[in-house]
Length: 206
Image (tube, rainbow, N blue to C red; front, top):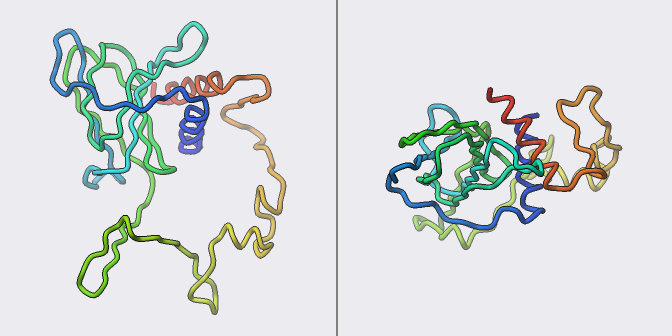
């Protein structure tokens, strides 16, 4: 549920256009400032990831309008970010997987590592003994079927009616009986929805 909300918050922020592309801030420690050195892993014992990450740091406390300000963002895998001392929510995304952590930063250099609860495949192509440039590869992953080792894409099977009661395709969406958070999108703006999700996630970290 939490991973879903994190992905939803990120998607809503992108739709709102509230997160302009940015680079990591000055890596050196500045007097009167706090410095965050960030990294992420797939699993507690895994090595830090070296690419594909998107980092965003939000103010933990909402503004007067209820929104949470985006303080800084980076697409570097292990950024060093300089920000004023204060309370923040650090968010990292890798594809559809994401994680967030509430951080209270003083005038210090602080290392934070977030763990993404997701699996991953490392795929490489070769032509004989020669490795193929990843930019020239196109991949599709299929789910095996009985008596059909090639299988089919799950979503394509649902569209063809081969998977019965597939929510959102051949079956209606059923609202949960006791949701942890509700977002009346017909009454709230995108920014307000984002703020509610960040507040919810920040409360889980306390």
